[in-house]
Image (cartoon, rainbow, N blue to C red; front, side):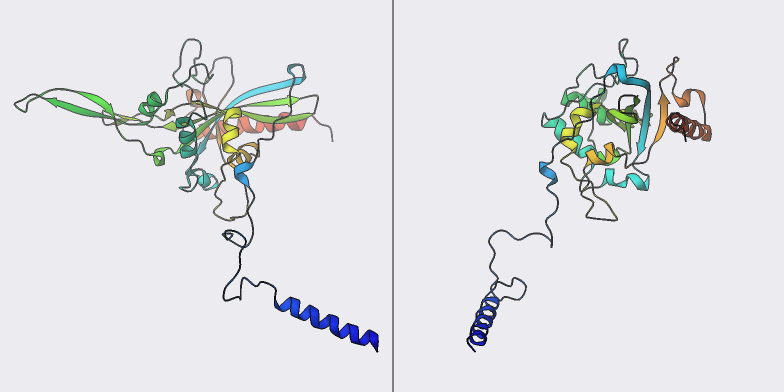
Length: 288
């Protein structure tokens, strides 16, 4: 009898405690300890992530190396995230450069740097903007309204106009780890500048050193049109190769680009041939 009595008392206490619990969904005056969460789960803390360093490679362990230049076209659906207004890659790079968190390098070819992508000369932010903006002819008039001359001045730059990025990377086989992998060295936005009403061929506006840029990109989330819960950063996208691209050049004795010896659709075929050659090299390393 005593046992039944204490059991009933316990049940009454539990029911009373359960009835007094906070219910944020049904309570007329909900109680909160902090600011509300924008959603029903807490997203990954991407703003506080740290770069995961690459595995160290010794020069004596490099059995094979090939340098490749690729272009990423933002008009490709697989690359649409790069141009998203919420997290546009060009905006991220520009903001970091202006804030002094990232170094821009001059893409102008020179005797010591024929391709202009060896990260030898830093680029001042003001000079960088002149490389990005179209030139506009501003006429000069005398007191009587007659045109006496004029000069070209830089106009406004819109980050929407950047439709391509060029990346420079090395494909390396590390015999110590038995791994054949790419390592991105640099990234450059390609801009088509308008001069004297004529649009020039797209050229790099500046280069950024990817190992340095990783510390910026690791804290920038990539917007995915199909899934909001990916939690991927731009560093993840580049290191995990989650983008579409095509090869425009590989290292060669003549330093030729594909367009220097192929035309039309043959340029795409040559790009695929080089890509397949890299895959065949890795495949031929192993016996099955």
